Image (cartoon, rainbow, N blue to C red):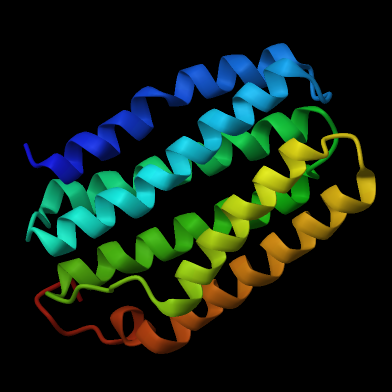
Length: 183
């Protein structure tokens, strides 16, 4: 197992700690929320670190390609679910985010079936950065509704834009029936 994959596994392992701290915070500013924010930031930084190590030391693996985006999605969805429970992140917005994630994952799986790998695009990276920073802002100001709504809209705009871009750039994976798949 590579060093990069071990770092990704740390991100997955600290997810329950994050969830417990968020739950204990009750959605209000205080020690538990600040600890949850610290854990979230550490987990977010491991995403940058494992990617850098994987590229620099040629530790890119199929398992890492699978685990890294899964770990990111678990972390982000965990935060969004807690905010949804507290009424700071509307369920319809969370559903749009999840729909985009499932759709892009499905597109990537279709591409793999046709021998093509869809790398993370620039807009996807912007979406991830905006989402992680935005969720940190929501944790820092958990009871400020205009902050929450601003973050929700930034997340939605970047999420939908990057999702549309993935499909525009890689739609041939859906429409092209060649490549050995069932016709």
